[in-house]
Length: 483
Image 1 (cartoon, rainbow, N blue to C red):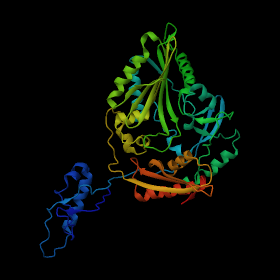
Image 2 (image 1 turned 90 degrees about the vertical axis):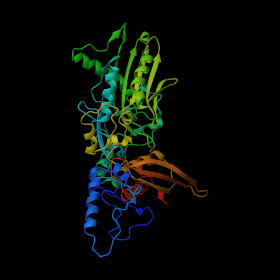
Image 3 (image 1 turned 135 degrees about the vertical axis):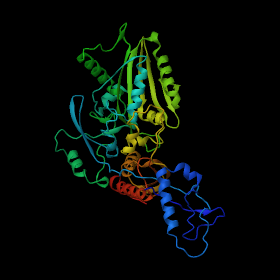
Image 4 (image 1 turned 45 degrees about the horizontal axis):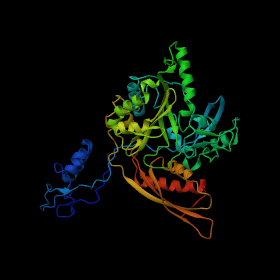
């Protein structure tokens, strides 16, 4: 059953109903706005309520006000929803992977736990990011042979791999990871086991230290891009081709005429903003193409033709082409290296492309556990089919939080705690005030948090509970004093 809030219902003269018989909501006299936006089940439910009230109205022997007189209902309905999956608390996610031939055990930061092992890009998936990937590959294969890697790549990479693969990436975006020792009874692993199962208040990421990249010898991070793993992908594709007794990379006068592709999750430690994604699926493909075929020009024309209908434009930069769209900004790059031949690397954000192609109001919907989400894509709709949102009127709540801190302020840890405490329902965080005490070594910060969810039913009470949980986590994890 839906939930309705009618804060003020008045007649055309500005008067409110005064008796039981003057409900002001009558079958057949609904507001045109309400008839247009409410579903048939909602209208049916309202009709039953109205009919019951009219039938049970007492016979006072007096002439009651006409039930046919309409009332103004525009803007009276604040929120409508039918049902919602429950919120799930973040948990410590323990991982074990082989990184450069060495077995590594580590913990995924708890604010990222809901993004791990979702299987959106598996061969049988009908998730929007997979549909977008299939759509792009199908069109690109009309120009080149594209071989996709099927093996799973580790989420963890070393600083050396990053430096060799993409030295130009912003180091402030890294999720640094403290690995557990090789022994299973190491202190970090023991701490993780003890904290697991205690809920949000009992867990905190053990894996997000600030690390000096140049001062560390064995530094690990969650991969911020798939580019450092591209050489591994090329080797894997060639090996797979040999096993299948197929011809691998096509050559034209010694130069590859096909592209090698890989896709998967990447992680970027960004602030909480509307279009800042801490995790997304990247589609990356690369190849060395013969200059005579003008591969950059062909790529620009192909991508422009494919993506222009969805509001994507290509902007020429010094290092290559940038794919941009409003309001999210950068959604991909085409990097080139002109020598005797042209080395081309294309990186695309599949999540933002899915938002554009299926008209999602929010990227967080891509991670929804609600079965109504997956049901819409079971028939494999083509890109351009708009998503039918099931959260019709999600309310927005704004709360401020102020605190004193005596230590050097680590804002990225604060944003991680916001994601964890709110179960991802905070849409935007903004610093609105900062004050340093002239006599004490303390600094006061005041942030404004906007709670807004398209994936769950978010009430005012639930938003307050999340906000109180954040205060608790800040006090215990960052040792601040809530004002």
